[in-house]
Image (cartoon, rainbow, N blue to C red):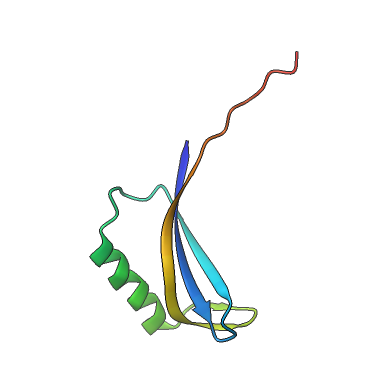
Length: 72
């Protein structure tokens, strides 16, 4: 089982762009998450093919389960 925290932002073109963080600490502290996303926007260190990150859109935990299937 692999969990990822996905931070979603809007860029200058209004498209969704994402930053993924592997193995997030749970439960997620909403206040700290909001502050971290605000700092990312204020620092303006990320850009996408359609422009800079300009607004927060959301965040979510993605939980992925992988099951191997025997072929023999």
